[in-house]
Length: 312
Image (cartoon, rainbow, N blue to C red; front, top):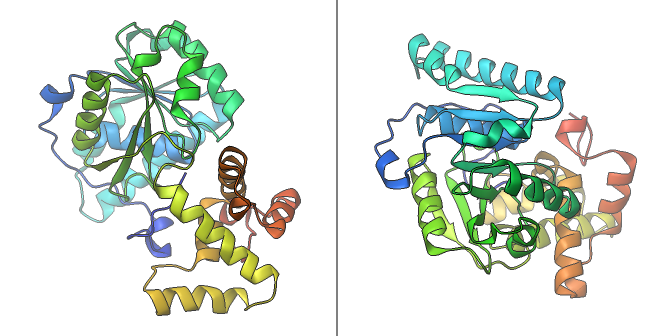
C-alpha cells in the first residue's frame, strides 16, 4: 500500500476525514453491490468510500471476526468525528453505516458485481483467494486487487476462466483522504472491465491513472527505491534520521520525510514491495536495505507497532 507524497501529511494520515459526496455515476459503472475482501486499514477505507461516496451497498469480508469488529468500530469513530465537525449529519452517517454489512464467508459474495481484494502483499495468499473468488462470485463480477506491486497477470492466472475480469485497483492510504487510484490491467483484462473499473473509481471520488502491469506499477516503482535509498543513507551514517527527513521536507518540499513516511506505510510493507522489485526486475539497485530487513525481523515495523525509525 503506497502512501502518496501529496496531502497525506502526518496530521492527516492519522486522522481520516470522511467527506460526503453525491455520486451521479452509478449508471456509468453499472455496479450495484461491492464486495471488499480484507477488513484491515485499506479494506475498511475502501468499504467506507464505496458506501459513503459512491452510495453503494458493501459486503466486507474477513475470516477474522475480531478484525471485522475492529474495522467497524473504526468506521463508526470516523463517522462520529465528521458529525462532530459538521461534515455530515447523523442521518447521513447512519445511511453510510447501514450500507456496510460484514461476513466471514466467501460464499456470501454470490451476489456482488465487483470485488476489491485488500489483503497483505503475499503472492501465494492472493493467488489462493482469487482462485476461490473465481468460484464464489457471479460469472459477470469483476475481481480487482488492491495490490501495490504484485503482477496482475500472475494473480489473474489463478482465477481460472475469469482472467479477463481481473484488474488492479491500487488505492492510496488513507483511502478516504488520498485522491488517487492506480488502475492496472493485466495481460488478459478486457477493455470493458478497464472502463467499468475507471467509472467506479470516479464514482468513489477518485482520480485515476493507468499503469502497465510491471513490478511496482508507477507509484511504488518510484516511491519505494526513494525510501530504500533514504534507509541506506541512514544505515551508512551519511546523516541522522532527523536530518534526512528535514532535508527532504524543507529542501524538496516533501510533506514528510522518507523515514517518517516509511513508518506510516509500515516497514514490513516497504520490504515486501522492495523484494518484489528486486526479484522480478533483477537489478541490484532494488536490493532492500540490510537495516530494513533487520528492523522488520525485530518487529519494528513503524507506527502500527509503536516503533520504527521513530517511537510512537
